[in-house]
Amino acid sequence: MTWRPSLGAWPEGGGVRFRVWAPERERVELLSERPGKPPLVLPLVRAADGTFSGFVPGAEAGDRYRYRLDGEGAFPDPASRFQPDGVHGPSEVVDPRAFAWTDGGWPGVPPEDLVVYELHVGTFTPAGTFAGVGARLDHLVSLGVTALELMPVADFPGDRNWGYDGAALFAPARCYGRPDDLRRLVDAAHARGLAVLLDVVYNHFGPDGAYAGAFSKAYFNERHPTPWGSAINLDGPGCARVREFLAENALHWIHEYHLDGLRLDATHALVDEGEPHFLAELRSRVKASVTGRRVHLVAEDHRNLARLVLPEEKGGYGLDALWADDFHHDLRRHLAGDHEGYFADFTGTTADLARTLGRGWLFTGQRSEHFGGPRGTDPGGLRPRQLVFFVQNHDQVGNRALGERLHEQVEPAAWRAAVTLHLLAPETPLLFMGQEWAAPSPFLYFTDHGEELGRLVTEGRRREFRSFSAFADPAARARIPDPQAPATFARSRLDWSRLGDEPHASSLRLHRALLALRRSEPLLGRDDWDGFSAAAAGEDGLVLMRTGTKAALLVLVRLRGAGRVEAPEGAPGASWRVALTTEDEGLSPDPAPPRLDLAAGPPAAELTRPGAVVLLRRTAAPR
Image 1: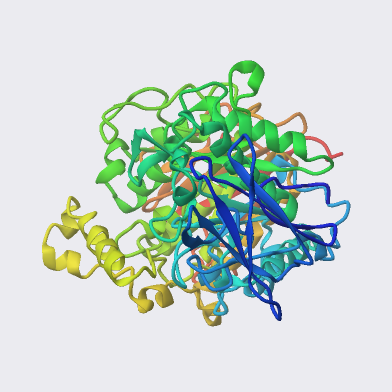
Image 2: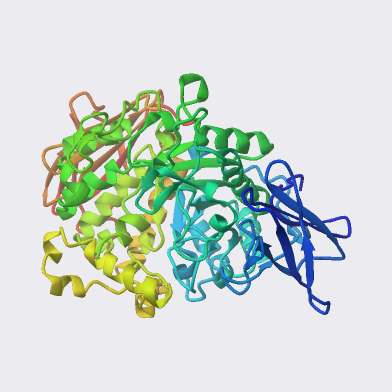
């Protein structure tokens, strides 16, 4: 491993090197706790850049340490690689070179092959650990996904959390396992051809246990308020070292854990008025440091900014992909009728859905009533795989008051139609854990803060929904699950014992069949818009068409009710074969096969309920 950190504690030459940034401090002392040896207090040497460092001969991995700042406290290291007793306890020296990797030559997964599966380590399995996730890798391979995306694992206060309250940004949460347990998971995933992405949070620190501010006030910029307090300082005095801290965090995950990329949380809250923008700098740092394998940087950003993924020579930041919310929002408006909050900006019409499918997002500069101004930019020039589509994700389930999944709120036939539309669209698909088998468990918001902060979190969670009509009554808000209650966390765990029951088994078979088709059919593997079209077919139908020189593919989808879905005029009118319908035996627990008209004219399907039909037509044998 050629990666060498500049912050934290790392073994070298018969001892351990310690380095921390504390520019406003006059004196920093290392307090080292070594098994079987007396405690050590070592004054560190200050450098001109405000860092303090020192070397301890004989120190080794497993030693614990903290820092005393101008005689104050005993603080964990902001760049700690592990917090065995929690975020308030001592840091532990970790040697990442000690792990015996077996993934030499792993090239990663190219963007055109990405099928992403988002999961929360603590609720994905009963074990709630990295090892528990590892035990389900074969399930993910058989499903047809090519990358798992872990929700944030940076250590947090308590024993349960979504991960977005990360306090020790370099340290895997001890409740999920030790650092080598995460390495073991990544190594095992690579052995099965799976990439591993990690969700990271650089827009704020968690509200409890984050000690970076004790080392320097320059970590924050009060000129830029955010929902979490002052913004992380990316453009004020002292920002160079803060930017380095975050960039080094990204590099540490990619090099010390062989991760295949990062999902950057809420990049709209990364306020940076300088040049180059932090995201462009991060992209350059990461790409320059990795050779021989594919690494992906993916932004979550509600602004629909093409700049995030445009290349540098076109004025962009050069990130690889961007979560695109509009497809989800319009689809949910159409299927479930959601119309409050940001859903108020969407009509749910099939015409809008077709526009979104055909260019990546709906809002390209129109006024958003929810955001109170124009939203979006022209996505022209972007490739389909640069846009991540989903019908569920942790936010769109967990930020609902009761954590309901979409498949619980629409009829099963409509769910199957929506899944087909999602997985055969040209954009990169993301699945949320349990989606593939229509898991019956909710995914709720949960925390494990101390009593006082926990009470505020519970009150804030319920207050958040007071503007929604279903929770206007205080009695209704009181029924919103308490994030602090252990039962809220327990209810969010997937119950894998239900996997073989209906309708879960048929939902799993449908997902497998669709992803197998996506993998095997060359037309579905293209990362361009050539020959692709999406069109509304009445108020409740959609048609996707992809044509090539030797083949064509049609997806006829009805999202609501019974009726006919017909391909547009000009579609080839003969030689179609059925690749799949959502009413095939085994893909539906109670099949109601559609009547197909493929003899002459544009192909059509008559459905007795929502569903989808996938048709293929070849003019020559595939090469």
